[in-house]
Image (cartoon, rainbow over the protein chains, first blue to last red):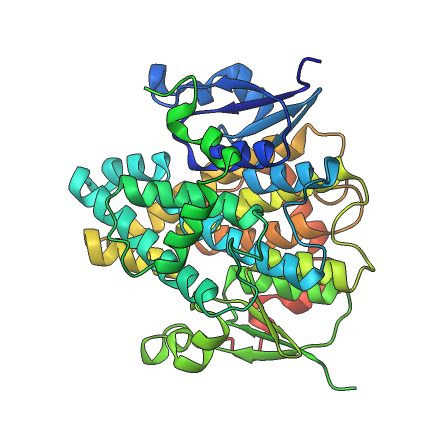
Length: 218
Length: 218
């Protein structure tokens, strides 16, 4: 059966990386449609894609004729539509905790280091490469300080962010950790994040989602 | 009965405003605990609050002994715990659409104009008031351009963002619109956002959540 799911993405996009992990954890087959964010002024700004996603951001998941945007909304949709294995725990407080962790990445770290933000820092403030890297490291460090505290002392933390099953929070943490490595953030203050990152990357679902494994990786 | 819910917030915080709307829509009684974000270097950085929320951000909702952070995680938790009236539609595709709209605000507009980001622009790039306002307007306009397109031509849009019942997306849109007014963003390109904003503000749940109506408003 050919896949009915199409994922629009870019190999190094952190938000798309999350959705690849979620799709792989659920063993869902999908068609991957790369968009080059830098070529021709950014393929995400083209008319065809803009009709699917007026935000002109990635990812976008097509399920049949329905386009879903926003990585967290996509992962919630996948969890409702293909419930097993679950990305969220079965209890309401557990779900709140996992969403908190996911959003601590998706709302408070990742948006600040996004390509369009770095481009804007250059355009408005003349930020050079060194300053943009400093900016990115600052927000990742601020977020990781909090995440380490949220995870290290909490009995709900297990082999993964929540218990011993990988889920929504892990799907957000690992791509952000990838960005931290890319920006050469010192990681010695984050032993719990390091441990969970390593545990995730032992799993094939995470390995296959890695940026370097994507067909559009350069 | 005295309320078991305590909301830590600040009158002008957009993320706290969202949660106030959600609590009011569900007619839930709650204790409001203001934190002053600017006094004494920011009360959100104090040891007591940091123990509740290592992110040192607001809002935080206490339900008994359980602290829940991240406005969207709080609203999802409220919707699961106090289901009526629902903040999310009953169908999975509808929920995906409402979450998309909410996250287009909560992930892609609001984090970029947050107090700590404006403070960092000043610290790292010497951004003055005019430049910080320009930065804020740029990101709200970028996000509103997309939201207008997502809402204007979609048959699922009704009197509110999704159908004729206010919900999660409206609870995100109205506080962001408040910020747009504060930054004096020209709004003539956003007739649908204006219409929905006005419809929301006819409701007492939204009126009572307004920043100026909070006890810590100055």
